[in-house]
Length: 159
Image 1 (cartoon, rainbow, N blue to C red):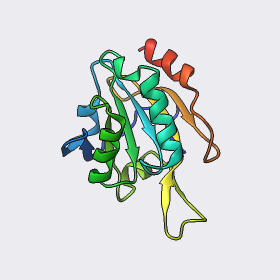
Image 2 (cartoon, rainbow, N blue to C red; image 1 turned 135 degrees about the vertical axis):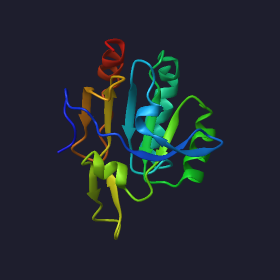
Image 3 (cartoon, rainbow, N blue to C red; image 1 turned 120 degrees about the vertical axis):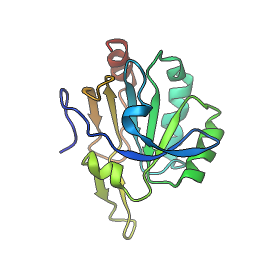
Image 4 (tube, rainbow, N blue to C red; image 1 turned 135 degrees about the horizontal axis):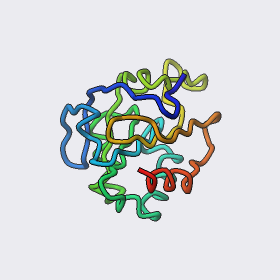
């Protein structure tokens, strides 16, 4: 079961991409002074991910003070960096979850029946405080649901 409100997300280490470089980074080191927003999507250049992340740009999510926006998807670091350049948002960063270890640690990994031998995380969002405690969680129960953007913004404001 994915983390719920009040639980602490386990620390993990994965390649963190910033649009130009990637470095193995502990999740706890990627959070800001107030926490962070974690957005899980299947693949960076999927239509849904492109739609969601452009909405985050238009909504001004890059302006959250001390609360970074951290994506997680199954793409490798070069694709993640290209996606960040496409977004033109160097303040957003992505964890490259190539082997699915991050998604599995969050209990989000699901087999995709129409993609042979492929699993991706359920589309989801977590707002965490600086100690990795979940303050808000949304996990879609289908592959196309939009994120409840206003609820996430409210949760960030409450950090």
